[in-house]
Length: 211
Length: 324
Ligand SMILES: Cc1cc2nc3c(=O)[nH]c(=O)nc-3n(C[C@H](O)[C@H](O)[C@H](O)COP(=O)(O)OP(=O)(O)OC[C@H]3O[C@@H](n4cnc5c(N)ncnc54)[C@H](O)[C@@H]3O)c2cc1C
Ligand code: SF4
Image (cartoon, rainbow over all chains, first blue to last red; front, side, top):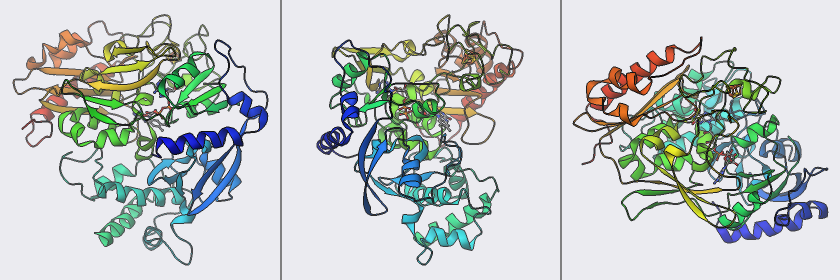
């Protein structure tokens, strides 16, 4: 989480960045006065780092982080499946943690460090998790794959950081990379083709290599 | 999604004041419940007050020997906190049984308590729902109600509180700390926080308009063995049909709350006296007066068996939650 001082600055950036009408609308209304629904879409500027590159966008406030990446930055690796946080196809790593990019507003990520599948590796320079998915056939149609891989990378980090899961037998003992742990921790990524067992193999191999 | 304006206040009191003066404003924390509902235009705030910049993300010891959990502590961090794992394992377990890793990374303590109590018809804007549109009727009464409440419901709403964390908070006697638009603070015992539907199913909690949750405090650790057992339609990533949060002492006494059965976490303190006699005696009292629908009578059997399994688990050797 960024420190409060930087958030303060960000807030100013946001207000200054908003269009004139929007800035007025975004300011607190006078006490007792209820503001009506804004007639036109309200926009604001937001800046964050995506795959190591600083990006600035002027966005309709309603834009999800997923739509910001796909529609505005043309990073179409992250997929829109359900758009309701149920399928995991939109998984990105934000400030070191995997999240559902569809269930968060882009403007809420001022100053964030965002990694999408495009930032993990490239076709001629695959991330070990990408290479392992290829080797083990961790996909069929490939639609959920970017989310699976981002999630897979973050899951191994979570285990390493000692974050327990629902299937962890002893909450106070060191975490293990087991098939049960991988399956439980990956349950937020749905694969309609059912490549799960191959995904588990790919992740197990990467975990083993790391250890 | 309807258009809205947006601000990031600097202090909790400012945040509360911003929502208090505008009935169409809402706080946004992790956004995982609110944005879900805004996309369906079930929630249509015209102003969002982003609370993520308020430094309410610490877990601190209280002078009474308990813990004070900031409203913005993420579910992942709360579940992984060493003190929570050791002294309030039922809370870690409940959190880890909920949602997915991605969602827990975003979801906050306050947001989790305030996720809407709801049913599938609440999500379907083509169907009548008193909770979504007061006075329109309840589609669940004659509809599919397999997952819905068996006790404490009314003829206006039979939805269940879907959360796991709140069930553990209830068994731990947590207190919800708030600040309002005028800067006044209030402590709400968790037992009084979530409401039964009665004739006002549109209101899930006793929180007042513009009241901001700043923290949830836990009293000193209750000791004993801690179990959270959740029964659902698949092994992971699904809401509870029935869940049980239990803290069981070596002499067999303890506390127990049920999830997935009512409009709020269901705990009947008098029923806990029966714990040494076993699950059947407890559920007979805890669910006295239950009124299952044509669809969900199985939950009463399931509650008894889930509690039985939880009590069995509490006696198994090698479980955490035993204070050295
Ligand atoms: C696919 C899916 C599966 C899920 N499965 C489970 C599950 O199995 N078990 C479970 O328990 N939950 C589950 N959830 C729900 C999830 O736990 C909640 O969405 C989450 O906890 C909400 O927290 P948030 O911080 O994102 O809240 P938000 O969406 O930001 O806010 C929710 C509500 O709380 C209000 N609010 C937020 N912070 C404050 C504050 N400090 N003071 C006052 N009001 C505030 C907001 O105005 C809003 O009305 C699931 C969600 C999804 C999308
Ligand atoms: S049970 Fe409650 S939430 Fe569901 S349709 Fe009826 S009124 Fe709406």
